[in-house]
Image (tube, rainbow, N blue to C red):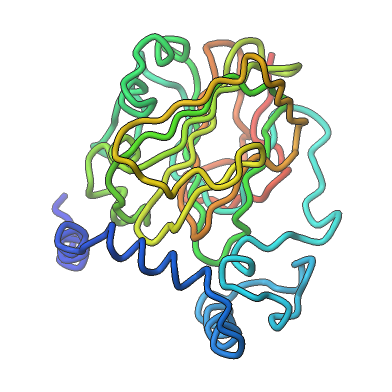
Length: 288
């Protein structure tokens, strides 16, 4: 079925937009302490996207000196209770796609897929660890809580910053841009399962238009800088172990998370469906 005219125009705009310059400029503005102007922008954003501030640890807009600090706001203690067992949902947002990895191919949208090798920056050996495994792609909209949490306990092994494009990751663009998540800038975090998962698992934080930066709990801001070549960090001699449900990263302006798990018995929550709403700490899948 042909794409609606509105979606074709949106995709054309994506191609023509100076995405990198726009991202750099808006990222700078989001970090400015502009007093009343900053607070006016935050209030507009809350109205525009129907942001739920009652669950924020700090609900008073005037207490946020920058837009970035508002956007990456913490939640009140207990706002996201953790499911008793299994893998946890790592983000607030909506389900894009999930399921089995067919060989090394991941479904992006109807009619579009891409390889785990492309997603992981061309590392075929790492990608082979997930052949026949499982994936979940989760979208964070502007209104959502933008911290990312661990689906299970894990020990960090590697982090790779993969340079790339900065297409929007909204649903229309996901339907229209082939291989989007393997083309956009992204931060690949490889963990060794500490308890629930036998073998490695991956959390990929995918950048997008106006995503000013991606940060992790152990490194801080990963990008910028954007040198245009892959950068890798290894943690063999630096034990970074994160508990199930712990914060592992955040987006300064929102995007998408892709999870990869190895081949083995895994059953996704039967209530899950593409487009469904998800929350941090809810049951994502069971193992065994």
